[in-house]
Length: 368
Image 1 (cartoon, rainbow, N blue to C red):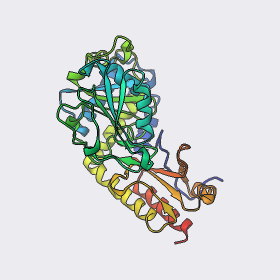
Image 2 (cartoon, rainbow, N blue to C red):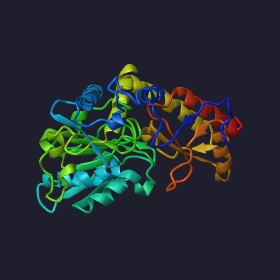
Image 3 (cartoon, rainbow, N blue to C red):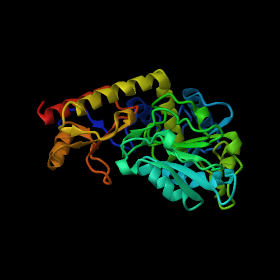
Image 4 (cartoon, rainbow, N blue to C red):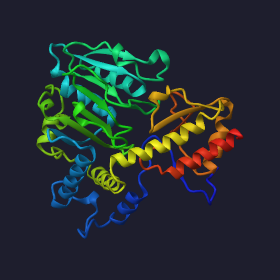
């Protein structure tokens, strides 16, 4: 069933996700000739002055948007968030007070679970806290976390894309604890204090740009610790020393990311987009909570503003719900195969009109 001709299309995909229409239009206009250079960005040398200017502007804009302190490096790499789950321990296990190293994890959903499995190849893993027993419906209280003295670092996933659980602030852990945060699915959606983290990383395909680009923000004193087995192209000290040009970077991904950063600045920056995201999430959760026709199972204080899973009370209606949604131009609402149900990803680029269209359909389908 195809969308009705008069219906605008709203893409609720979890990633690769919707991009701002202004960004797509600019990229299309510049596809064959970037700023009179006679070249597409995809054809440029990554060491040429044209691309170097694109790269430097993107770094400067991101540093401004997130108020990244000067003692942090911004790195653009390839490999995606899952790839960084291997790259991180190879760069940081030497931070442990004793070897073999231990890495602490807080297990709050599917992505922190994947991170645990990957890190176990390089170090001992201590699951300091887990919400698995409660089916990943929240974050265990920090007072219950069993951290390891002298651990290399503490790894958290601050927004679980599949499970819809979000940290609302940085955890209050003992001074000296290096926090590594996977922020793939909510970076740039809310104001954060970068200085509270040793490393922030994420795949770009949620709020930044195309799949294949990975962002790492790392405090300078954590560089230079890579294991001998770490590939040189993934040794953060090499990448930082060469300004993300140690090998050929994902140039087009960086270009699109730069356009998204400029778009965010035009929206008023991260604080302004955060308020917009709060309004969108409140609108959608109110519709889901109106009665028991739909369910969101995450504890309200941990509900994600970005990735919102929900279930129909009568799951035999799932196919009919998805078919009706597609007919109305509401796409990619099927939940992750590991948890079922539905999922609406309402990243920065999703306009409130898209959320309102989904709310209207939720009410219609529920017979309200």
